Amino acid sequence: MDVFVYGTLTDPDRVRTVLETDAATAAATFVGRATLEGLHRVDGRYPTLVPGGSADGRLLAVDNVGLERLDRYEGVDSGLYVRVAVPVAGQDDDLQEAAERDRDDERCWVYLGDPDRLGVDATWPGDGPFRERVRAFVSHTDLAVRNHE
Image (tube, rainbow, N blue to C red; front, top):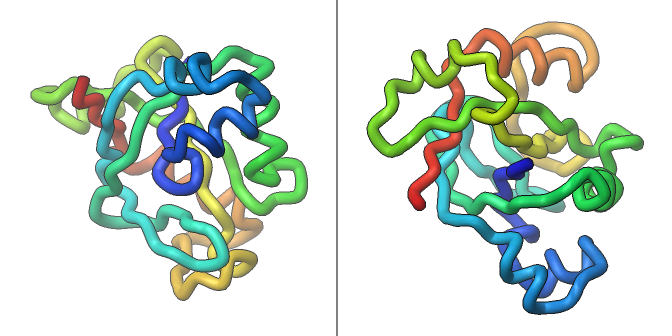
């Protein structure tokens, strides 16, 4: 499965450490450059994404064990980041068409950090806990990761 990364996890040494692997394997997990359309990067204590614009990053290919290690690194259990599935679009795909596809093989994971906990001056629309606002936004917005490779 693929994961869109845009911050500290774009560094191969960090990926090697987080995934507990060797340098060659860590380098092989990077499957290409990508852009996430519909969210943009902001920097706080750690980088995160918030509604609007686009963010450049990379795609990592990981297995279930790798995903669990990424979840721990991103603080998913403590609510620091939320992991959500986003459609993957090709270079020339329409974003709305990509968003309407509901196939797991055409989705990737993205980690979105809680702006309040990261010291970022940004808000997510809606009411309720951060996780619920993010999931509602992602499910009702034409977001997609464009794979450049």
